[in-house]
Length: 88
Image (cartoon, rainbow, N blue to C red; front, side):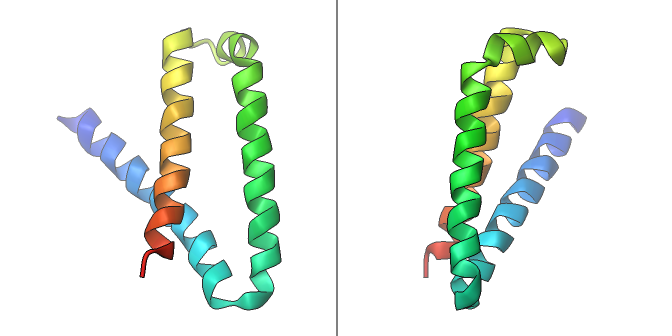
């Protein structure tokens, strides 16, 4: 039960942080260019993390399944956080 609550908390923090960036870009037009480049950089980081998955899972000393699960979770948090703020 404690791990579920902790995981839920991390998920909500991640969604909040992504939502903050997204909403800031929506409200302040000057930040829209920064938001675009932030999305580009984050996408490139996800691509690199996917390409070097064996190496990073070995460096972080976790199993391959845990690494892929973490990567999928991070991508999900980013997508949900961005989508929530753009729905009106």
